[in-house]
Length: 297
Ligand SMILES: Cc1ncc(C[n+]2csc(CCOP(=O)(O)OP(=O)(O)O)c2C)c(N)n1
Ligand code: SF4
Ligand SMILES: [Mg+2]
Image (cartoon, rainbow, N blue to C red):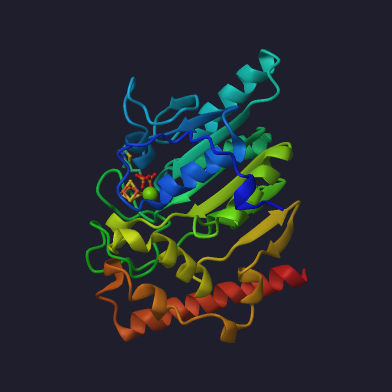
């Protein structure tokens, strides 16, 4: 079991980095480095993280990283894994770290190829539910109803279920996480590191700027995402689906808070009608009915 006390004191995400205050992605990066240490290579496409990292020689990452084009995380990671193998280096973990746009939209093909080849790496999608770096355009991971600059009256399609798409590749490990539950995230990272093949972790990453909430509410918003069932914490290990706490206690609809409690704290949902909120609630309940079926399979 992971405890806060046993986490290393070393910081590999350095102070003074240009992340927005309260950025869920920066919190997740800090946790990632604490969980896995410095024997990693980060593969990062164009996204907010390339800004958080900053330019050489002032980079805020104290770990090796490779910046690559927007669509190529899976392909570039495959190349780095092959190069390490060729050089006989076995103790370095390759991490693909990309946003939702770079994962569920433009990077899907390269990621799918890497998963199909069973490339031995951990791919992490940090999902702020929009194209943050270019000013908040909608992505395939933007939820129904959310304001973005390209959905000024609210997106009309639901969020793509990327973890299940990755599970359909038959890879050995798929998991979801959120920085509001840090020990769950760290446990999953360490487990993924020990498994051979392609591992996929999808983090919901609250973004104060794009979601329009005060920057001191990141952790609270993330907890509400889980408590309302808008985001579920689960693992799919060798095809077996399992909900993790606290989501494992929320299968019964009565245990989940109404989605309205999560939506009302965010400016991006301010314009929603009662009908829109009912549609989001219906979608969440339907998603959880699917989880029930996946548990009983
Ligand atoms: C082929 C290509 N198209 C568009 C861009 C411009 N671009 C850079 S980052 C970005 C958005 C990235 O969004 P996401 O992957 O969700 O990461 P976030 O910025 O939200 O962290 C876009 C559209 C690009 N670099 N390359
Ligand atoms: S726009 Fe959002 S995801 Fe990007 S750095 Fe700012 S808070 Fe983080
Ligand atoms: Mg994004």
